[in-house]
Image (cartoon, rainbow, N blue to C red):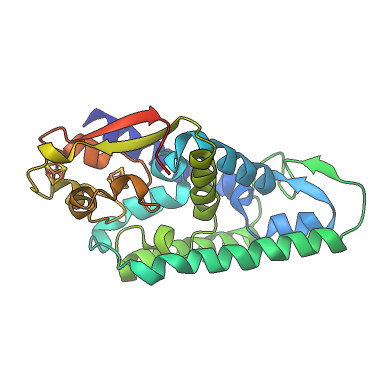
Length: 245
Ligand code: SF4
Ligand code: SF4
């Protein structure tokens, strides 16, 4: 499928650029910058993710995320679907604690508020010293281990600090009735072959979600379109319309 080839190529390129971009996704640097009243690169990126998701859902995760790219590259190491349910909620607990830490640090911080997208980078590049590589590979390990132990994109399911921005952003877009990219299913055409579930990089049970009419409400769907491109009966389609609440 051409679309999936393009998607995977973009994800691999995004991962290869990770040593350059990693600080722009840093959950730590945003706190350090908040203490100095600086809106840094990761602040700008996280706000952009939130705004983008009001219109495009979790497309970032499906098409652009370096951490997602890394996990798809190593998925042969453990292709089983990651167990879901309560485990998916862990990332929201992490996210809430982290957001509180950012806000409190900002309140306690000093200085005029300034914007510095290249905060703590060298001419915009994140990893420029040998010491930074220690941290870089620590992050790589953090991203790789859950996926190798628990299965497909387990890091996205369990601990990703970025995913909640997009889940919340999508819900806000929905509440505001903004036309939003999503995947719709024509349930009647489904022959329950299960190919969509097998193809899903998030390991979702797409077939069951469709039969229960829940696929459109699934917050773990990253709108990658693998199910759309795999379905032999053309049950699934990308749509850019207002979603039902
Ligand atoms: S691949 Fe298509 S036909 Fe098969 S279970 Fe999924 S939606 Fe139904
Ligand atoms: S349900 Fe479809 S679009 Fe959503 S993550 Fe799975 S394969 Fe991608």
